[in-house]
Image 1 (cartoon, one colour):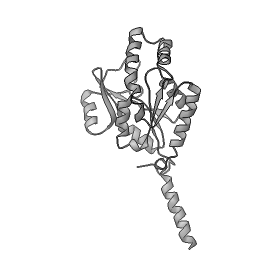
Image 2 (image 1 turned 90 degrees about the vertical axis):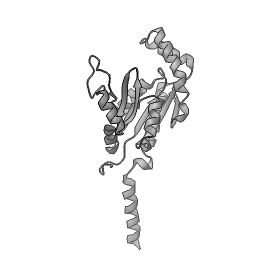
Image 3 (image 1 turned 60 degrees about the horizontal axis):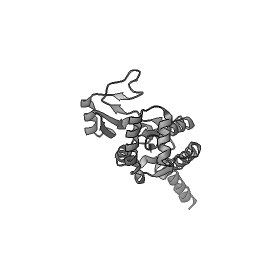
Image 4 (image 1 turned 135 degrees about the vertical axis):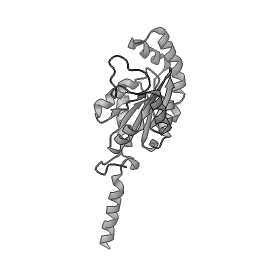
Amino acid sequence: MANPTVNRRGLLIILSSPSGAGKSTLAKRLRAWDPDISFSVSATTRNPRPGEVDGQDYHFTSVEDFKHDVANGDMLEHAHVFGNFYGSPKKPVQAAIEDGKDVLFDIDWQGAQQITNSDLGKHTLSIFLLPPSITELRRRLESRGQDDAATIARRMEKSWDEISHWGSYDHVLINEDLDKTEAELKTIISATRLRRIQQPHLIDHARKLQSEFEELE
């Protein structure tokens, strides 16, 4: 149930792309633009790594509890990756929506489909980022200096599968220029915040206008 003091419902903003297409940089820029946009903190059954904080980096949980949450419908999306479970807890996201706060998801197309098909899917805004070319995608991966040649090769192999699902997203942007793409993202988010379903106060306002008309009779 929406908070009656809030003028709009929050959005579930899904940002997907192949590795190297600029997703992480643009996500940080969106957070700087509007600090009320929060990252969804995933739940995982893997052990914490040095320096990771429970509730901040991940919600660390047991396999038993994770499966229980999935069975109860308490995960918006989930996946089994390299022997561990990962997922997006539903309750904090739902609370954010009702409080008029947007939640940003950095997930792949499979997670995006699960969220879009969930009971919160009507509040979803999904955006896919395409690179200007495959040559440029490889150049960006190599210029980051974070991965060895074998890792870059694996990321490149995976990129086509990710790119092939671009058509299932609400908006698709070619990230040739970061500043231009950032401006386009802000425009898309600002416009989507004005969707009728995101503005629960409109019902009361329309009723008020109707009452004013009746009083004129």
